[in-house]
Image 1 (spheres, rainbow, N blue to C red):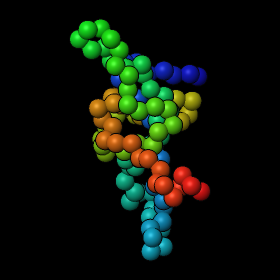
Image 2: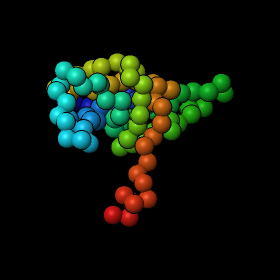
Image 3: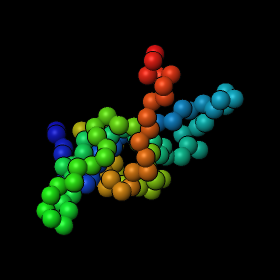
Length: 103
């Protein structure tokens, strides 16, 4: 099934955090918090400004983003848990470091 968000909405797939701490302690599922990091699956075309022109979104498909803990609406699409949120709920884009780009 294909899904295209409308206006300034973004479809996001949560990126799960590691189940083990740096010290080697394994965190059980019941103690884990919901991740606040995700990958943008698709974006809407943008919102119309006062003159009627469409303002494109700053995020694009494939971007890794941070969002608020309680942001978005959870949906299930083709058996996968996803979030739909407004672009204003996105706190920022995670850009790869220079070392990761060179590798």
